[in-house]
Length: 469
Image 1 (tube, rainbow, N blue to C red):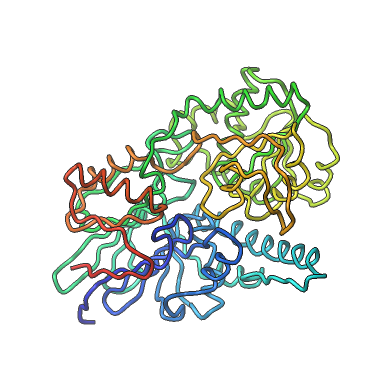
Image 2: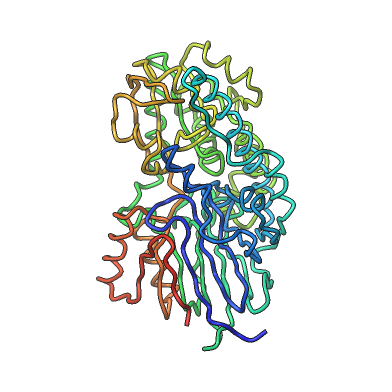
């Protein structure tokens, strides 16, 4: 096939953080980099998620960076709408995506059923984006590829997955593209891990990069030191023990939950906190933690973690921790008195069991809501983080009497200094595209790069297209 102009267009996470979707067109073929779900206000999210700015049937291959829902969550809808392409991912990502997508379908169906029930008198209804059958269809398209292995997703494009250090299985996607002007190397970071981590090895920038597509989530700030995490969490636990209250941690089931449990495991071992019951109330987090244990000797993990795991035997288990699977066990927590710590998805409080824990406890002064991850604009988590005293949960208004606290230490995203160091190391020769960041964070990172003399930096708008020449 004769070479044709190569180009990339941006269909999600352009001027916003969630919903990553980037389309590479080269050699007459279309390669989709991630197919993420937008997370935000219900009506806005529904419109963005149901709208593909390209025909799904035109996609020839999908390359999945990792299994967070804002990167993989629309794969079932893509396949439902006509895409029959292979979906390439690392083996751990393929395994985790199976759990994430099945859970996403279940949560959407459950949330829609509950919303429709409590709003029946108003004739208000919502429909899930897809169901379990659609999720199963997408999973049949998954094709695992090991890290650092060369493969050709479409003719004229060579690919390789490199460790991204963000979550278990996460990968940067390196693409060597044949164009009329010669071969061009594009690197898509997906979500890039930070240099300092609790569990994973940090990412290294490859060489010979022409075009870099890089996230900018924390392009305007640096993280608090990870060393502070245990002390802050210990303080929250001690206060809950004193007050007999509940600590509710809305947490991403993938990585963040395991990081928190790992810290709790170490604190229990050195007896630095009172022993209160810990409930991991998420079937998905429970299944994912089992996968972490299965892969705990993988090279993706930091050496210090691997040493601890060998010494401890079970870095995600200790006395008084319970992994909750059934709905009945989850509901029973509402009637249990504190102190206790409940870790439950979703991390931005946009769905799942955490909403039930919030609506049952948010009006109690003894409750602590501990936010441990990024809260996108428009989400319930962001509204709580911003200090709103009245919020809606399942469409019903609740007063916020609980103490809302935020820990920025846990982020698994590269911060401003990490991003700058990575871009300098990669030395993109022809251009850098900043994606996956709110406008303020993107603008700040762009200004930092300009001050460092780094040129050809673009902040693409939604739908914007660029030639790779």
